Image (cartoon, rainbow, N blue to C red; front, side):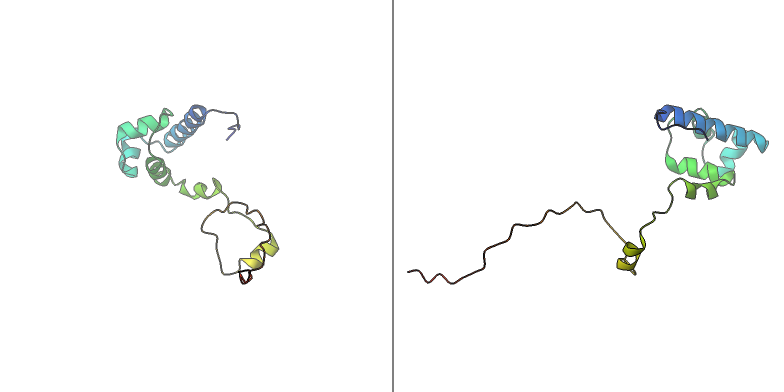
Length: 116
């Protein structure tokens, strides 16, 4: 796929739809047959192939019906961390993002208020 970073969302969807269309035709399936196999409506499949907006679940269902779901793992690759980070996080997985903390100013030590 030759989708550039500068391509608009509409262009990306249009190219994905074209690729789905070509794959469906390669399997010699009608829109009705593929829609039925994927569990989506024929109109939803028409929208996907035309590059129109639809739900992500519908796209995934069509990919599964075409035997292309294995390619989803390459969309967002596993994150790689440094060996030091792996040792620190051994047994732990990040669950949320955190902001960079700025160091606190040193505080004065606590003393009794004996000045009465």
